Image 1 (cartoon, helix red, strand yellow):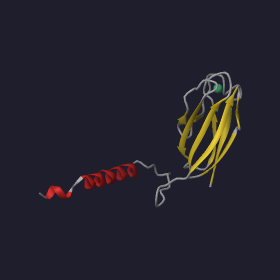
Image 2 (cartoon, rainbow, N blue to C red):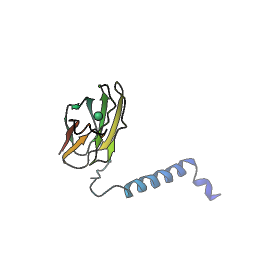
Image 3 (cartoon, rainbow, N blue to C red):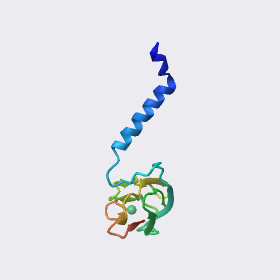
Image 4 (cartoon, helix red, strand yellow):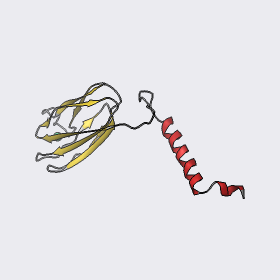
Amino acid sequence: MQRRFLGPAGILLLLLAGLVSLSLGFVPDRVRVTGTMQAKTEWVTIKAKEFRFIPDTLRVTEGTLVSIRFRDVGQLAHNLTIAYYATDTESIPGGTSDTLRFLADSTGTFPFWCDVPGHRQAGMEGVLIVRK
Ligand SMILES: [Cu+2]
């Protein structure tokens, strides 16, 4: 009964190894892989109302997992779109909130905006600054 050696723990280990190699395979080149692959989480809060973001400049550190608490404190529905990081919230009604998470893996200054038609043009934009 050789198969007995591959008990539930062994199967779990194999699954984990598979998952790890699978996830490593999908890491884009520009992501720096550190020994533990544990990114620190950095929380920031941004409020939206007609027609601006408060604050309109977000500063985070490269390599952190950024969690943005997005609060719509206005009357209309708004969203937060960060095109460079291919991430956005739904358009949420006034008085509600949402959370956006992404790995800030590139330094630079990246615009964000609300993509409800007309809102960016009305002033709903800002910049995300990712520094070393
Ligand atoms: Cu908006």
